[in-house]
Length: 217
Image (cartoon, rainbow, N blue to C red; front, top):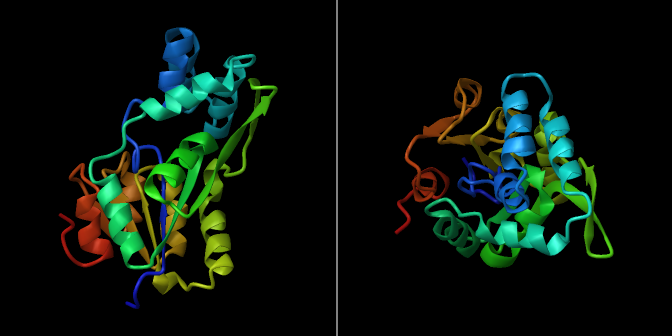
C-alpha cells in the first residue's frame, strides 16, 4: 500500500470522549433531562433520524449566547492519544480531516488546538452573538462517504493513499471509499464488520500502529 496522504476522522467517539458537546451544553442550560436526553433516547430507539435529533437539540438553544456553546466545546475531553496521533501524522506530511455529523464549532477546536487541516461538520446559526436555533446540515448522516470522495478529489489522492477512522454506523460509508478503514472502539457491529481493522483499546496511539506502522510513544 502506498504511503498515506489523507486520513479522515470521525469526531465524537473517535477524537473526542464523553460527555459530548450536546450533553455539556444542555447541562449548562438545565435542559439535559427534559430535552437532550429524551431526543438522544428517541434517536437510539429509531424513532427519529440523527439529523432530526441534531436539529431538535440546537432548536432548544435558541437565544442562548454563543459564548456558552464555546464554553461547552472547551470542556469536552479528547480521547487518549488524540494529540499524539495527529502530531505523528502531521510530522509525516499527512493531511488530516474531520468528517462529522456533529457541530462545526467542536471540530474547529481541533483545528485550532491539534492542527487538523480540514473540518467538515454541521453549522449552528449565530446572529448578534446569539444562537438562532437553526442548524445547517452540511454533513448528512448518510453522506460521509460522499464527503470523503470530495476531499480525495480536492487533494488528488487515491483510495490507496486514504484512510478513515471512526466508531459509528455512519462511518461505514467512509470505510467503503477509503483504502484503509479503522474502527476505533466501535459502537455497533455494522461499523466493525465494514472496517479493515478494529481497535478495541481506548487509546488513539493504537491506531498509529495501523496508520504509520509503528507504536506512538
